[in-house]
Amino acid sequence: MRRDFLRLVFMLSIALNLGVLGMAAYRQYGADDGRRPPSQPMSKPALSLREELKLTDEQARTFTQLRGALHERVQVLRGTMRQRRRDFFEIVATPSPDRDAIDTLLREMNRTQFDMERAVADYLLAQIRQLTPEQRVAFVESMVRQANMEEEPRRLPLLGPGGARLPDERR
Image 1 (cartoon, helix red, strand yellow):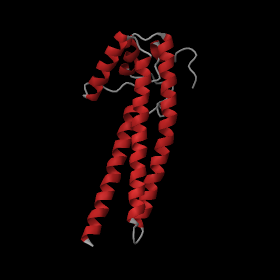
Image 2: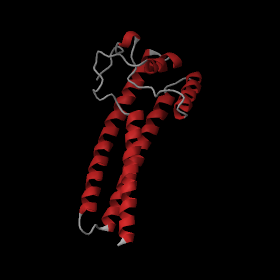
Image 3: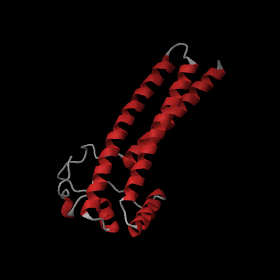
Image 4: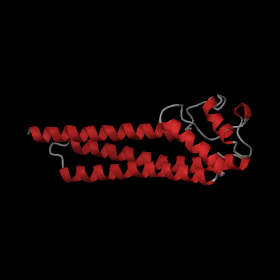
């Protein structure tokens, strides 16, 4: 009985950790899902990415398109993760939780989390491919600073002067 209780606590801990990691990834790389009013300009760090890298208009548009694709992919994966968490808690709440079903579900949750991280990695690699060698160096240095929590994460889509959307940006 005690062993089953410890397993349950362990599984809940894993689920909670996965949830926290998913939320951290969402906050770090998540999209602007409409929570910020359109009239409110983006923060200074968001604008400085374009300035710091000296992106051309074409590069900025490409970055915005890449971000849109990332947003769509991550939204699907988040929905999948939410459903798997609900399934997990339904199984755990039964009088006799099926250990094999729980293990299968945990593996699926881990795979979904990996897929989210992979999508972000693919996004960053696609951005890097758009940059000149000098821009790549500055971009990587910026990512290292962010990873070391030396600055606030940058948000895209990129905006022009005064917070105006770039020309031809489709949303």
